[in-house]
Image (cartoon, rainbow, N blue to C red):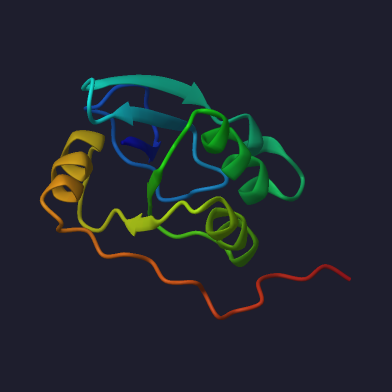
Amino acid sequence: MILALCSKGTDLDSELDERFGRCENFLIYDTEEETFLSLKNMAKDEAGGAGLLAVQLIVDQGAGVLIAPEVGPQGMDALIQFGIPVFKQGKSKTANAAIKAWSNHQLPLIEKNKSTGLRRA
């Protein structure tokens, strides 16, 4: 399974980011190979639609699961369309801790947000 995690740094000991669409980096972790790569989040500086662009970045890396603090409504809709479940990173402080918690079934699944998100006039 390929996991995507929101990170402030570039390795598995890095602190997790509190944002999804505007996180600094994504860590893409392969649970079978126990390898990872760090991917700079090019969506974070976009004026709008960062969540949707971030979804495309992780989909392009083959992610089958996202571990994140939260995801906006449009990003969640896109993740649902791609069949990617989202787990709340919870109290995990590092990518390693989140991966271990996910492997032990200790992270809650984030359900689709019922809010409509921000609308611009």
